[in-house]
Amino acid sequence: MLNIWLYALSSVLAVSLVSIIGIVTVALKEYKLKKILIFFVSFSAGGLLGGAFLHMLPEVIESVGYSLSLVLGLIGGLLLFFVIEKYIQWRHCHEPTSSSHPHHLGLMNLVGDAFHNFLDGLIIAAAYLVSPSLGLATTLAIIFHEIPQEIADFGVLLHAGYKKSRAIFLNLISALLAVAGTIIGLLIGSGIESFSALIIPVAAGGFIYIATADLIPELHKETKMSRSLWQLVFIIAGVAVMYFLTLME
Image (cartoon, rainbow, N blue to C red; front, side, top):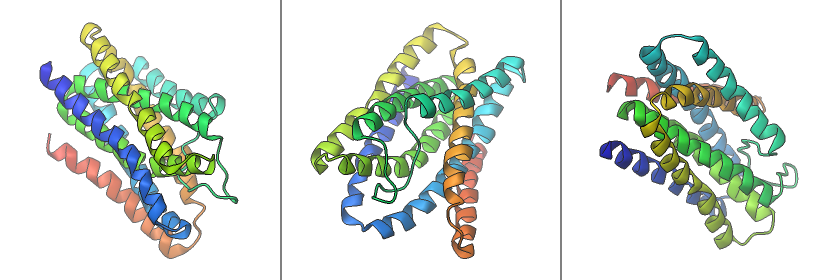
C-alpha cells in the first residue's frame, strides 16, 4: 500500500506541475501558439480515447466483468462532465484568449478548473488502486490533456487582468487540488473495496466526453487538408502511446 501512495502522489505532483507550462504563452506569439496547440489537442484526444478504451474499461471488465454498473458508470461520467461544463460554466477550451475568442471570467475559470483538478486526483488514486500500469496510463492521459488546457487557462487569467506571476501562482494552487483529490481517493479506496470499480468507469466516460465533445470539435475548425491530416496523425500517435503501454504490462 505504501508503494501505491508513493506512485499516486508522485504522479499527481507531476500533473500539478504541468500548470506552470502556461509561461510559454509569454514567449510565443498568438498565431504560433495556435499552430502548436492544435497538434497538442489532437495528441490529447488520442491519448484520452486510448486511455479509456485500452486501459480503463478493459481493467474494470477484467475485474468485475461487463455489467450494468459499468455501463451506468460510463454514462454517468459523460453526464458528469456535461454538468460541469453546463452549470459550473467551465469548458475544456484549448485556444488562447483573444478579442475574437473570449473566455469566461478568470475567477470562474479558476473555480471550474480547481473542481476538475480535484476529480483528476480522485481518478489517479482509483487507477493506482487497481494497478500501477493503469495508474501510469491514466496519469499520462491526464498530462497529455493538461498541457494544452493549462496553456489556455493561463491565457484566460492574463486576459482577465491578472499579472503573469499571479496567474502562474493561482494556476498552480488550482492544480494542487488534484493532490487533495488523490489523498482523499486513496483514503476512501483503502477502506472501500469497490471504490475503483465505481470511479474508473466514470473516469472513462469523462475521458471520452472530453475527447469527443470538446477536443475533436475544435479540430474541425481547421479546414486545410494538410493540417487536418497532421491532426489525424497526432490522434493516432496519442492512441499508439496508450497501446504501447499495454504491451509493457
